[in-house]
Length: 201
Image 1 (tube, one colour):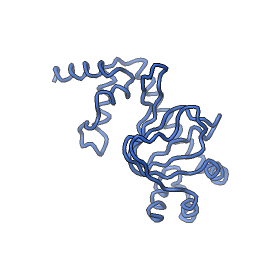
Image 2: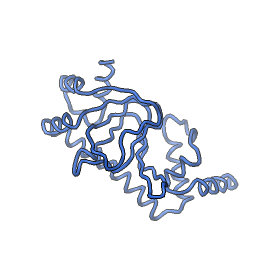
Image 3: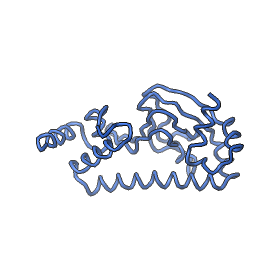
Image 4: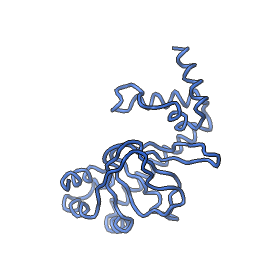
């Protein structure tokens, strides 16, 4: 398990500039754990005390409106970090983070993250790159919500899902509700648009 964890850490983007000895030291600071699908790692306005490194499974970041409507901000795959936004600024999360699948992940404490960033400027730069990518993806989603109709948003999502390596050019394992939450609409609307797509071949 220890060697497996160290091998995983060495492949995480934010740690790619660390020497083998530094990764070994990091290995002793990080805890590997597993959880079942449905586990909520944090909620909005909760203090962020950890950085999560996703080794296996998928995690969803989402927000809820006052009437309970869910908007998926991001779906994270293996090798992704999350929880990093709360480690800067006001130190609080602004989304829910929930396991979609059974997950294996590494957890790093806030104090260890802060110390590593201060000691290793290259890690700090990788953090900035990771946050910039997350921000760009959020901006693209916001642009889609503002300028694209629901059929265009749904078509784009289906194409994106079909390109994911594990799906083999097929979109499987998603309910109409899942798709609706990812494009910011209602299940009934998504079903209507899918039926239209089907009628159009």
